[in-house]
Length: 559
Image 1 (tube, one colour):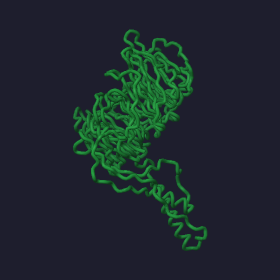
Image 2: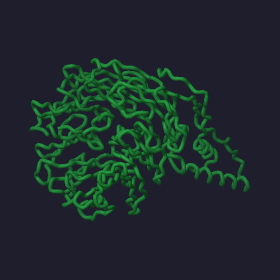
Image 3: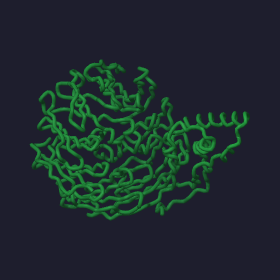
Image 4: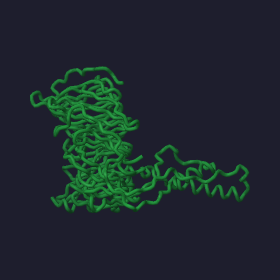
């Protein structure tokens, strides 16, 4: 159940874990206040003469043949069917001026003509069976996330903010077909603008969230948008405000303490109350407290980890891996690590806690919870352990790996349903860092590759994007390098597509050349994204939403 992750200069370094929002430690918090309930390209670039050939979609042809032959389809026909488009990566040598090649977009591939009903004699039946087997094999190998329909950047809309944009806080978020923009005036009044990316129309403007001394972040949620302020130094309190996604009206607000954190799950907002030593489950729609539970050891401090699912890691993510639109519907568990090193699993819908297990981890240990497992890098032993969350209090953990002497393990990241990836650095030799992918089911290293300066890992399906200070490297499922040390930023669009920026993301107003990539295909040069504060940008699989110099801009790059 993801939460908030503050923008570092790249919209992605939020103070919440794979969903955790850094917020606050409440003094006894007041009762939540319930309110009215829910409810052409301007890139100016030259076109090169080279053109790509029209791509062929063999999967679409296979579908047509299967339908025509009556062969059973081994999977639902509903997944994305965008025609396969280009891939490996590469920016133009000169990224100061955008180079956007023309290419031809194709619709779904045409299938074979239907077979006649009378085609039943032995030879015809044998041929039909062979066709059916071939089609079935092709469909089973069909990519779950085919290439997006990339095209040259197209400006969709420019929106006027409620207050003039300054050097102060501003942000953009995208979830599904809804983009949200936020900015503040000189008095700290936050204004939020919602935009429907399907209809290309502004949905609403709202100042209902009110003022704060300073604002920290905005989090887009299913049917709602939340804003969290920085703690006010005069009161040591922060504000959590939830607006209705359809109307912009205030749903409810809550007072946070200066060190509380906030997590978002299936219809629940989980507040980690570090002053009272409690967890509080608030209803997302009303703000009413559903449940609360005290820390098991009676102390005020604890660490809470969202238990992510494979679906959480298939959608768009920021430049450090924060999911923009995780599947909260199945995010119904968290793991709490108490100060006494005990661990327990909590159902966020009801607050029901499982039996604690002693001596699991320190609250400061490196940990991640994913797909029914808790991974812990023990600081006391340098061992990487995997606990089965369904048997946390009874089953012994699997010892996956022991780091060598003087080595440290960082960036624990799920990189497949049954894989965990991490960065290993010996001493301070960041230039000699290695990425290790460990297969939990086979109990062995899947691969190990050098990745100088790697600081964060982002799963892209079974592939892994390694993020260094100002470069990225993409490894495929076998550890083979698809590109290495490419300058700029790269982000996940879905489990099969990546968007590259020609430079790292920044709060300054500047331009970035963009490239759309479906690993294994030719890259598609998209053009120059001009005059935006790129660290504020958010995206889905077709549009970017960014704060520009004086307004908000929505730009389409696919579909």
